[in-house]
Length: 566
Image (tube, one colour):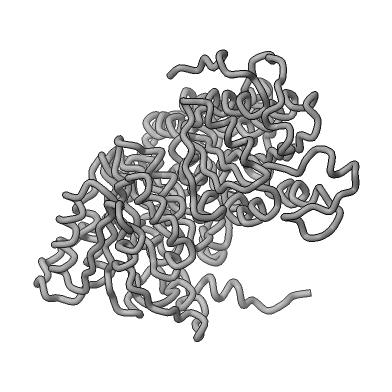
């Protein structure tokens, strides 16, 4: 890639574009507004960055979230306040999911604050820092550039924080400074990871290795933070060295090969894969690497993970028997532990003794009504190492967990933040980041789809080719199982028909509708043969859901309804 833009007159906008290119951004998502137009003009001068115009800021933010999951970093450009505040929910989700999304906002003229002007796109107060304060709560670094002398320092400060801490940052640039010349600067130095304290690292490794060696039946569990902190390969090395049984937490699906001989499934309390919870919870020691323990991952706090058995490895610390080893960084720790650990396959042998053989499903007649299970099995049949699977918040979580990923097939969902509508917007950025490497496939519920459907228009606009399985059961099924009421019903749409609306005169999207097994099979065959976006509307019964959702929903509901205690 050509990164030499010396022929371009350096200014804040062109320099920012160079910095984005340096950290690995190839596309940025935007909605134009008067405060960011000059900035966009300058960024467009960089031929190595491509602009992706979105229908609204929320979708642009979700797209940046999806893009960062593939590329490791992303950028979104909005206008002051009215654009930024539309973006907030997506950036809060990226913060929760440890994704470095660079939020870039055009700002008011640098003179307006001192001249006490009341500006448009504001809440009508003489407050120029409102957006800054709001984003400061959901980013790891927020900066405002109102003076040209601050530009280099603040740009470097924000981008370095995003890379080091794997979190979003906010950069606001006064609209009249975006094209102002600036001198060349010392190249940006990035440190994606801080080195561990040698003493703390040695002590943590020795303590954990000793604890595991005293264990009769130890096991490993992969958590979602392995990816954000570049520790997936290190965890695989630890698994190979230890020979322990290896499970994944639900939001870490895809971070350990499901065809690996030590893989025993998804640990998710009472909705775990068959046999997995029995093994993990019966072990006398288990190492969770990069976990998030919340009410969703613990099924309403009902998981039987015992503190006295737990070794918890977080991005910047290790916790064992109530003692915390700080300044110990995940990747370094796991690699060092892998070199010291002794093999023990007792937990894996225990799993193999109780492992249930998967039952082969009988072929259903083509005229049989479509069900969740039939959809899941047909999606399973088309996944390859050239695929990527993305699932929306809801019963798609549980359907996704039941699908066995082929080696090389990535998997994504947003569990910590759990924002419905995330998947459609994220699919846009995810598909752009994948390019021609893999074809993205998504499972999305109808209620979620209604929140961010405009992203389909953008996918068609840019010639993307995902396959969307739109599950139409006329409601918010996940909410039904937590707490039902009339608010969980939605207005039905002609979802397949929407693709034709978004195509208008030039689009290449295709849509299909299936309510039987045969209709779905036919739609999938046509979708696979099509070179553009394909949406398959899958019509199922409103009460058709996985048994895991029923179990999970009842326990989360119980946790939510605990009586107040003084």
